[in-house]
Image 1: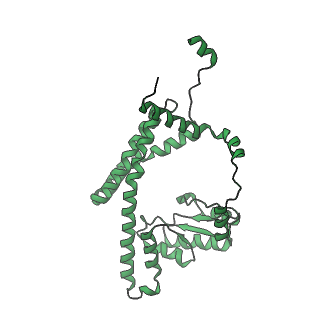
Image 2 (image 1 turned 180 degrees about the vertical axis):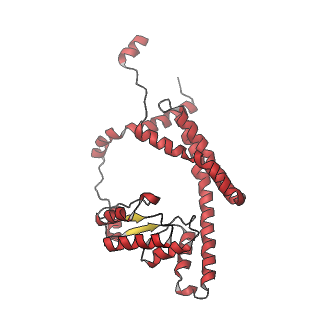
Image 3 (image 1 turned 135 degrees about the horizontal axis):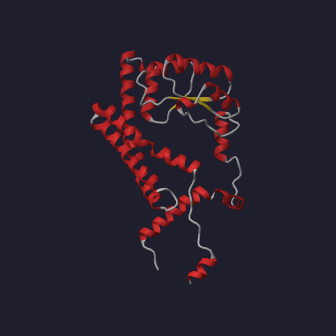
Length: 268
């Protein structure tokens, strides 16, 4: 019998998810047939650019990072990271501590959407910290804070005001991106719900999580005066992704056993 398009898509997605979860053990044979010399040319270029031994960047996961960890990663030949530096004293002390303990490279990450007090950012810059930023509005804010020569026409309060303008633009960009961060969870949750080897509650949680991000984003863009209240109510719903990841890491998928030859002949 020719399968319907819906059943084909359902089976294909389920098989892909299952292969990603339990198919790691079979990757050795494929790797031997299509081996890629390591490090790759891109990895070599990256290591040469930053003077690294390994093409590894520590993830700046907020309070999970610390000067000791950043120092250890940098001394090992990778790039360490600092984050969650919410006060000038904390920023200055953390950057100075890493600077004095390693000659390797490291980055300092600021979530510019949440950085309303520029003094901690300025303290990190004054301490000689490299700041990682990949968006035009964020870079513009950093240029204004550092006060380049061509900005001498503007006095310091004007530069601070312009920096805050770019930070707000950056925040609105994050709000727009947040809409898509949520929408993709529905096409993820639906096949999880229909897969048969993952608990259906995980699919429900992911699909509910789908609406939390867009609601937060639309509130921030259209009704900013209610942003704090709506965010407080939506925050518990945003743990769906975390629950899904923890389930896969701890419990894993439970694929249904395939029917053996004996069962097939008996059925015939």
